[in-house]
Image (cartoon, rainbow, N blue to C red; front, top):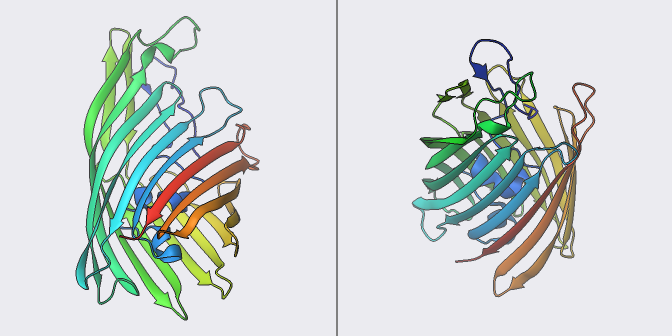
Amino acid sequence: MTRILPLLLLSLAPIAVFAQQLSLFTQYRENATLINPAAIEGDYFAYGQNLTFGVSYRAQWVGLANGPRTQTLRGSYLNTEYSGVTLLAGGHLINDQTGPTGFTGVYGRIGGVVSGDPEYSGLSIALSAGLVQYRVDASKIRLRDPNDVIGEQDQAQLFPDVGLGVYYYQMVGDGDFFYTGVSVPQVIGLDLTFQDENGEFYTKRVQHFYGLLGFYKFFDNDSFLEPSVWVKYAPNAPINADINLRYQMPSSFWIGTGVSTGGNFHMDAGIIIGQNTFDNTIRIGYGFDYSFSSFGPTAGSTHEINLTFSFEK
């Protein structure tokens, strides 16, 4: 599941591009609702706040020209006032650019949480639906001859997209939380073909399958420990898992670390501003990845920054 830049098959046949199709995240807990539309924001478990807005920027492989760049904007709401089936809603905007290829998508998200009391446990089922623009700057795709390009203009296509997810959380012990979920954030598989007078460029979109698992262990000094796992699978690719551990200190600072089976080392840290002030929380987080895999070229480090605002409504 390691993300690779597009590779061109240099032959007389049409040109194909193979790449990791969905965006990756170092601080994936901050973008859990993009990974699984049924996910509950961590702000609810950690701070009891059910309305969240966030923005993030990720620069992957900064030592490599035209490495992936990802920006997200998201919002999420959980109605905690009723039992039975209660509302889960939100949406997000995502923009991703990798070399000459990229996509921009806007999504709405809606679901229900089945629960006797949402403050203690719940089973949520939700879907996301949106419109995605896939694009290619054909003038930047070069063949064996440095002067030979596919075309001289940008090309773009619009397609609908749907994601599905199931998520369960449960309070255990004295206020600790366990959560888990499975999702298919890109249900619609399709073939994208861009054609001009010089040939064809195509890429195939395939379904990705994700799993989330985590636990919040709270301590008497208002700190907590959160181990978590993000499992990723796509057809014809090995299963990959990100394994992470985050510690929220009694102060407003947190630190985390982890590894992935794909050969990446993770670190993240952040600070909370305004916790327990007018029932709102502002968080700023930074994530860092470094690849230690012995396979493939060294692409450089990855940097990610998140800004999140949450409050109780």
